Image (cartoon, rainbow, N blue to C red; front, side, top):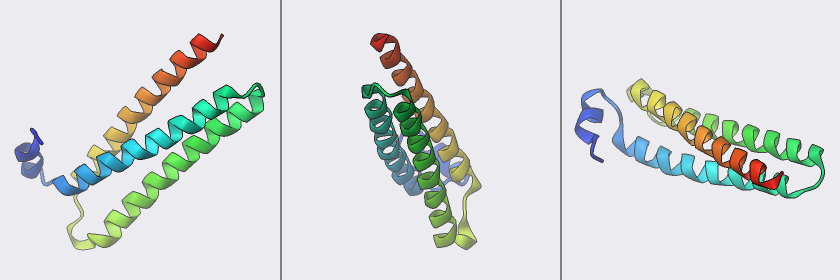
Length: 108
């Protein structure tokens, strides 16, 4: 909200960014919980399956979200909004990975 004037200046859709940020947070939480569930199992293959499932589900849900945004706002799509959301995806993924890395260090 502090950057709203700057975001409007570059042509980003602020409401899309707010909704996208919340959805990315929820998707990342779901992905994190899947990975934690995989960490809790003794089977290494189950852990790898959970990591793949969380990564694939996160990517597919983001792809569906971007596709829905483009289809709904076809004449007025903001590339800045899409790139900002892609950056937020990267930030959430880095924090999720760091947290899972800390958990694996504690487990060993």
